[in-house]
Structures are given as C-alpha cells and as structure tokens.
Image (cartoon, rainbow over the protein chains, first blue to last red):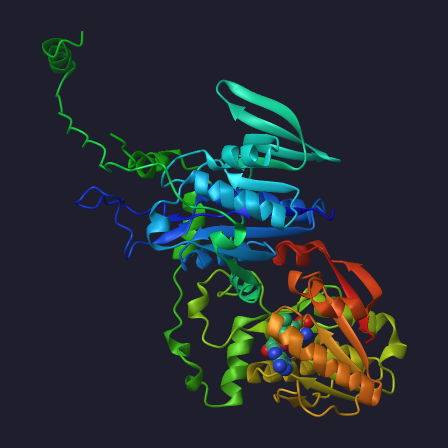
Length: 254
Length: 262
Ligand SMILES: C[S@@+](CC[C@H](N)C(=O)[O-])C[C@H]1O[C@@H](n2cnc3c(N)ncnc32)[C@H](O)[C@@H]1O
C-alpha cells in the first residue's frame, strides 16, 4: 500500500493525424500538428490509477521526457488520476536524438530517486514503434520485467503478469521492484472529464534536467532517412467472374 | 537504410473499438456562445440562472446526505466539454470536494465541534462545511471564497436547505491580521503548494493569537502529504468515500480530517 509507481507518458503525434514526411527526409512534420498521449501510455496510467483505487499502491507519478509541451501530456495523466508529475526537460538537438536508451536511463535514474516499486510503461509508442524502453529500463535497473501485459495481479511482493505472446497467453510471476509494459487489452482507459481536468490543474509538476539525474543523452544512433511507405497501387474493377479468372490467368496468378 | 515511418501508419488499423468511441466524445458539440465571457453576466440573477442551468440538485450522492447542493454531475452539458468552453474561472464551487465531504461529515457527527462557535469556512466552495457548522449550532459562520461565483452558489445552496443565507466574503484573508475565530474549517485547501505555504504560516498565527481550532479535510493529495504541515497534524477521522464519489475523483478512495496543532 505504501508503494510508489512511476508511469512513463510520451507525447506523440495524435493517432488520428495523417503523418507527413519532411521533404528532406530527416523526419516527420510536427509543427502545428495535433499531439496527444501515446495510447499505450494511457493504458499504463489507467492501470496505475486502478492499482491506487484498489489501495495496492499509494502514489502514481507520471513522467514525460521532452520539450515544454510534454507538460500537457503530464496534465492529461494527472486528469486521469495520477498524483503528481515530473517533466524531464529535453529540447532541441537532444530531443531529436532522444530514443529508448536515453529515456530508459532517465526512467531508471528517476525510479531510484523516487524510490518506486513498480514502473509501468506502454509496450511501445505509436510514433517510432520501438518497443524497447521497458526492456531497457528493466535491464538498467536489473529488475524483472513483465512485457506485453494483458493482466496484472498483485501477490504480496510479487506480480502475476499475463502476457500476450504469439499463439496465446503466458502467465509469469515476477518479484517487485519490477517493470511492466502495457498491451492493448490490459484495460480501457478512462475519459478525463472536465471536473477531473480542473482538479488536475493544481497538481504539481516538477521539472528536472537529465543532467540533474546524472544522465548522459548522447546517442550512437544516426537516422539516415525517413520515408513514406510506398503508395498502394490502385485496383481494377472486373465485371464478371470470367473476366476475373482471365485477369488472374493473364497476370500469372493462377 | 533505416526507415522510421512505418510506425505512424501501421498503428491505426490495430486500434480497438474503444478509441474511436472516446474520440467521438471529444467531438460532442456545445453551443455556449450565449455565455461567452463573464462580462455577459451583468447581474447576480444572470449568474443564478447560469448555475441553475448548468448544475443538478444532488442529495445523497456524497458523504453527507443531510444536505442538498447544486453540483456538477455527468448529466450537465459541460461534464464532457473541453475546459476552454467553460465561461468562468474554474467552477470549484460546483464540486463537493472529497476533503470537504470528510470535514462536513465530521461536523455533523460531532456537534460539539461547532456549537456556539464563531466559525470561518475558508475556501468554502459549495458551502457544505459552512452549512453543517451552522446546522450544528454555530453562533456565527462566515463562508469565505475568493471566487465571487462561489458566493452566489453558497447562497443558493443555503436556500435549497431552508437555511437563512450565511454571510459570505470574497476577501483573501490569508496573510491578513488574524481575527478571533474559534474554529477555522479548511476543506480540500491543500491542493496547491503556494496556497499551502501561505495557509500554513497564517494558520500558525491564528492559533497562537486566538487559540483558534483548525480542522483540515483532505483525501491524501500528494501536495498535502508532502507538505511540512504534516509534522503538526493529529488525525481525527477517516472516512471511506462512497463509490459514486470515487468514480468522480479518479484515484481517490478515502478522506481524512486532521487537526492542526502547531
Ligand atoms: C478545492 S476547493 C474546496 C471547496 C470546499 N471547501 C470543498 O471542500 O468542497 C477550493 C476553494 O478555495 C477557494 N480559494 C482558493 N484560494 C482561496 C483563498 N486564498 N481564500 C479563500 N478561498 C480560496 C477556491 O475558489 C475554491 O472554491
């Protein structure tokens, strides 16, 4: 009951926005584009708040790494029931280079500083699809990990985690402190109602710099090019079954 | 070559049904042009009308079924609206805060606390604690809130409960010369660091000059639990919040009453 949980919330381009690649292929267009919380992070926050509501944990801390605007993402987490926020201020070139390794170093440092028993993250972010941060964070801390969780149950000092794996479900038991990453079916996140948004306005967000945490943000990864997936070819309409069979024959499919 | 665009595009088709539904709720349309700015409200009557139209009379859906109040509920049109559409400063008076609920419950259950006393409810909001003090025999109750709309809401809530409207004030008393209050009530007032710091030093002064009794209701907010005032508190009561209150206050399930003893 006295445990603290750290939840990572990433600010990404909203899932409903059509992504455009910059003409120079260095990245995607983000200026003036609607951003919101990565949907898997919403699931992670929801799970943490539910654990708090079941009185299994005491405090939920939402953390986001990025520029000033990341605070909006933290506010959303606070409106969903997180208790306080930590904004790790990363901007400019550092933000461009910010990847799973840098974020996991930050999360690992914060986990120690805030003395947390559990870290819940989304299994991946919908912008870079990396699916690495949870695993790297667990490795850096040398904590057990329960990735792709579709169910989490507390058992004294352990967690029973049901994982979505190819071909079915796997259930594992891990000792806390631990890292859990949320899969799509873990829960259905709640909607931040106006009163909850209002109530969250005054919740505290501390801002720290990676250097305050002793984290070096240098990256060994160089992005060479970002490109649109190839356009889907337009289809053709056929009038009759005979036409279809002829077409398939002519194209050598049958 | 490393291609990074895939992720953006691949995610969409795998979204569960839940996402579009929640998205649709965002899009719900609201016509609020009529109430565009506070200036449109020329008289207290306009404010009253707005309060009536945008709240619901609630009784029993909280820790103190003894009193009725006009509050924000899921039936109100702004409940799911974007916050920018709300025409006033945040309607804290339209919410019965879990800290205030515990404090008010405590006053009802312990009539001796306010009987015959001169009471200040600072940050009164909907006025619940002030009303309870009055109903339990306080000789004088001042409902104080810096939000002028709250003072109208408090008067209306008094009327709802057939109480003679309590005196209200919008003055910021924090930091002013301590008056001779017997009892100061603080329902959920420790939600903000700066406010908590100001209150803490001012309350110390109130207690030392007039031996005022100070009662605090709080549901375990991080700001309160991490504040230095914790060193000078005595727990008086602990209440589990009814399910409907928990459902409206994400993450909170219980609320406590504390006495401040510097
Ligand atoms: C969280 S609400 C609590 C309302 C009520 N006590 C309850 O528990 O339901 C805080 C209230 O304090 C008021 N407030 C904020 N600062 C204040 C101050 N310095 N003096 C008086 N009221 C203040 C706000 O306008 C708001 O109505």
